[in-house]
Length: 300
Image 1 (tube, helix red, strand yellow):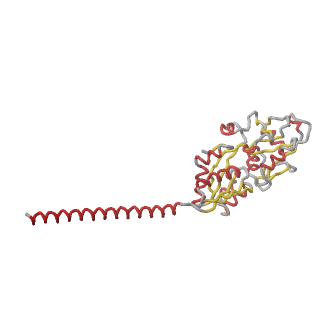
Image 2 (cartoon, helix red, strand yellow):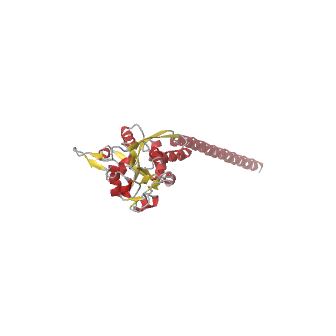
Image 3 (cartoon, helix red, strand yellow):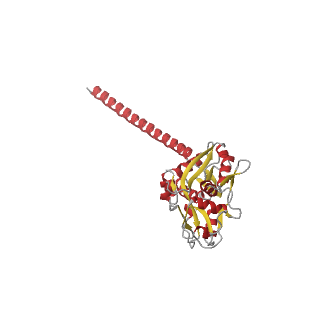
């Protein structure tokens, strides 16, 4: 009997030791698995982390909204620096094609020859172009035909369109400006030369400016001037004319009733960096489009 008790005691001790060792082994395996998973997560996070620079150039119309999006994007991807430069739509498109920037900003459609470069167009927003005069100008409404004649220099005095007896001073943007290109195309200010190439029919003595802001500042001081601006630049320093009685507003552009409107584009070529793609996704996504909506018509 005594031997049986000793045997049972040894058996019980053996079972306890086995269970204890097994539990410790399971615990060690679990801890080992957790450690391995944590290490893998660190590796994955390192792989997913985006760092680098995204460069943009082009339209001065797109520049302010692109910069605003870039500022907001910095809080989402602090490892990515976004540099936004102007230069005009043609510059942005050429830079994107040449690969000197990641994204080219444009406020006009691509020309036929540019479409052959293999570029990808990303519609950021829609915009209207307002025909603007000094706030004290009594003229408030014109039609596209009259606007065409004024910018061609065929109508030279404001009294011909119901205004004061004063010479009309035409203000416009520089060659290569997307705002100018879109305005000339929509209003019918592009003629063809002997070689069949489209050329501007803008009056030769028009005052030209390298940005929307510069044109607006000059027009605010020029009582007999007339020019054109992106809707995003309108304020109390200038007066936007109605076109055939339709106001230059976001609502009317969206409804299709305001005739002088266009696309705002971000242009890329080929495969772009993960950082540039992340910025594009943000700009065209919900948060980016909220920023677009502050001044323009969202694309989505």
